[in-house]
Amino acid sequence: MIRPEALLCPKPQGLYCAPGDFFVDPTSPVARAVITHGHADHARAGHGAVLATPETLAIMAERYGQGFAETVQPARYGEVVRHGEVEISLVPAGHVLGSAQAVVRWKGLTMVVSGDYKRRRDPTCPPFEPVPCDVFISEATFGLPVFRHPDDAEEIARLLRSVAQFPERSHMIGAYALGKAQRVIRLLREAGWDRPIHVHGALERLNRLYEAHGIDLGPLAPATSAAKQDLAGAIVVAPPSALADRWSRRFPDPVAAFASGWMRVRARARQRGVELPLVISDHADWDELTATIDEIRPGQLWITHGREEALARWAELHGIEARALALVGYEDETED
Image 1: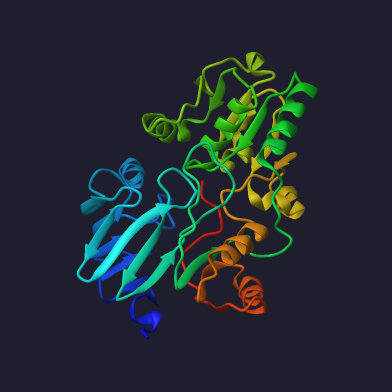
Image 2 (image 1 turned 45 degrees about the horizontal axis):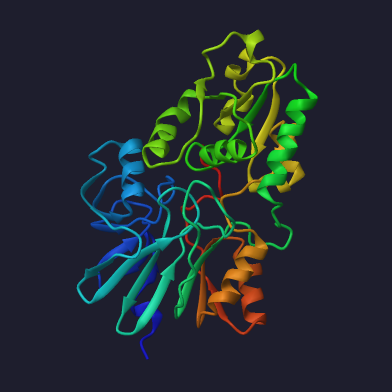
């Protein structure tokens, strides 16, 4: 029986595959990298060769420029790529546009690197696909029982009720530029909001990229395009850092909202001065993490980052061998 560490093992740069000579989501430049998604803590510039979905490669090019790697290799979902005797395929992770799990197979051993993922429906990307495997390598950003996220539609309904209750005020939603902003906009459209949504300039390029990949965001307007008095009742989407910035003063008595799984922690909302916390996360919550592990039933569970101890203990109580990798360099949904 081949030991899993012979196929994938943790190194300072990230998970390394010796038989295929590549890293998955390395945190510093390497010769060969497989990238699960476009967030900056997983997708860095400067690698020699990068394998990723076409959407993730487009996101990296948009953020870092066309020369972000020496060579790139697009792989569509389900396509098998071989590096020596190792087979690599990418399957949807449900995190953001182009996000994927890396399925690595070698000599009958299958290991799946989840990257970041969630299990609930997201109108901006394909849903997570569970893959039977010997070792499942999972994140645990919200790996504590306290993190049980409400239904997205209910959070958007709370937002729209606030808009109706305070028609003289604008509502400014802090949302991460890649994935969260576009998802919030789509959820608003599905809830029936057909008016223009005003967006911060930092979101415009990624919004265009999403629309180029078939995600209809509806009518958008630059947040600076209207006079202050004309923005009463408007919805504005901006990076979280803009909520406390002078930029926000251009809006009439704005209601500060923030879309994040961390808004389940009231102290975090208070620290940020958030008046309307929206618990909308692009990561799996506790129930989604445990349900995923129970569904896949891997021989071993490896946990890359986040709240590792609680999830490892849950797995062991359910008869699954678990270990915490404690990889350094991956953030817990803090990207602007």
